[in-house]
Figure 1: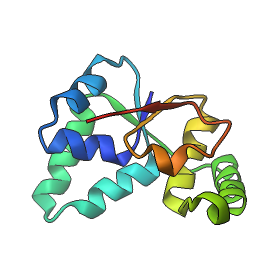
Figure 2: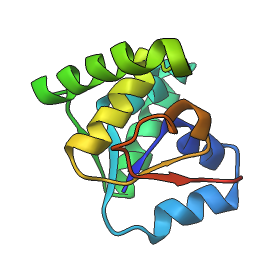
Figure 3: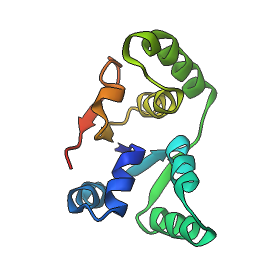
Figure 4: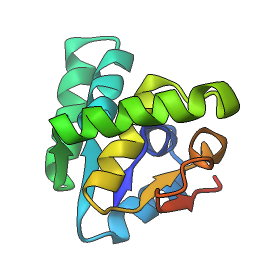
Length: 125
């Protein structure tokens, strides 16, 4: 399963459901886009370390941006930006999920619902 950035934010805020959905998964992934967003949201080097330690201790694998993911993301932007307002970051996260045949967990369903080939698991905090 691959986790959207918002799930990590919910867990950081103490949401037990977000922590539990991560904890019960055996295989945990995140897009390099999510990884960068988490680091970008940190306010100090100490928070960078906490994020990295959390990901390591829970066994998350960061999936890289590949040529196929980039290509698929650009297609999503072209196909869905005007109709659904998808942004490039969400397109990269969705493309990472699809290219790796993973279910994406997100509470931001409206960001992803237009993408027909995406397996989406809605999260309700």
